Image (cartoon, rainbow, N blue to C red; front, side, top):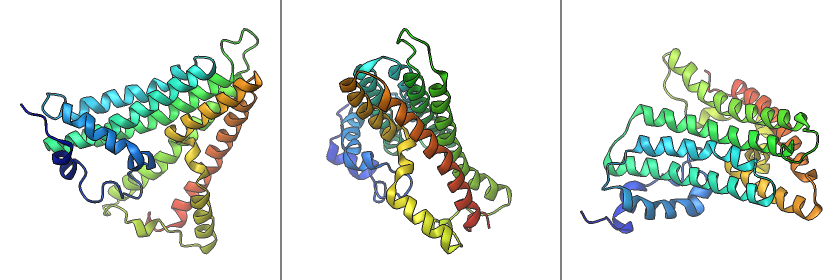
Length: 259
């Protein structure tokens, strides 16, 4: 069977609005990964590979970022970035294959969310273990592993806070929340939310951004010959995660999403 061209695939797998979704599309997807995924799609659409199988593979790729980051030096940071980029590629491809084959399922949506949780957590746990210097030959400082795990917990809780809005509304028999309801009713909270959104510091605890930051820190540490900046980054991301978890909770409670 002849493989479809990229031009044939694009209108089906990239319908209007896919790249413009406010919360559903990552900047890396819009910038480059959606174009790469189209080239992968054409080799998969005529096979028996299912969207859910790709989602499982996506999750494995994301989780592998943690052991990849345990490899010392720049090599481990590069492997971590590659694992996360493979995760992102498969995250694009699974939905695109689902659209082409019209194989939609609730389990696919659920598995996609699980994969996102695990990828973010794996990168941050891997960062903490990397900062603890497991293979350095000296005393392992578990404080850094704790801080990495704390950052991972925060990243997961932030996603859970968002998802639980839908759970709460469903249990009350309410329709899905509208984007306009996300705006806090308090002017002070709204201003703080807009400031945080403008700074985008909260994105640093997401798997893709965190993996790139880890690579940058590894390059600087390689020049210094220690783990100073990796450890500093671990502490900063832990602080961001804790702060953002609290701010996101306040933002939800101060908005109309639960009303």
